[in-house]
Image 1: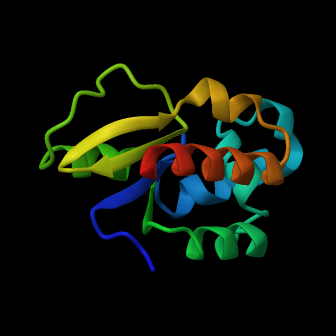
Image 2: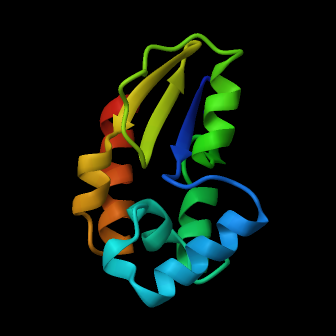
Length: 130
């Protein structure tokens, strides 16, 4: 059962839109080592979210939302926050009306395998919900 009081907010270091999506897909394919969004690289194939990641997210104890960087900044206009200097990609925990940096860009960018990202999310969620 998902806990309604908390929510995981995952923010890609990429902007939304058709042309950005095409550019990002090409960049990931041609030069993955220089692609600036490791969260995207770990969780997406060329275009679609990886099935293993989608199943993992769908089965978490709390609901999750995904934002591109520009969509996230737009959402922040109507939500109180204290994250001006945050680098992306990043994962936040939305709890009791506040956004808390949950996994920072350094942590995400050090991860090499999807399984390691899933392990990190699981571990941090366990610590945050107990």
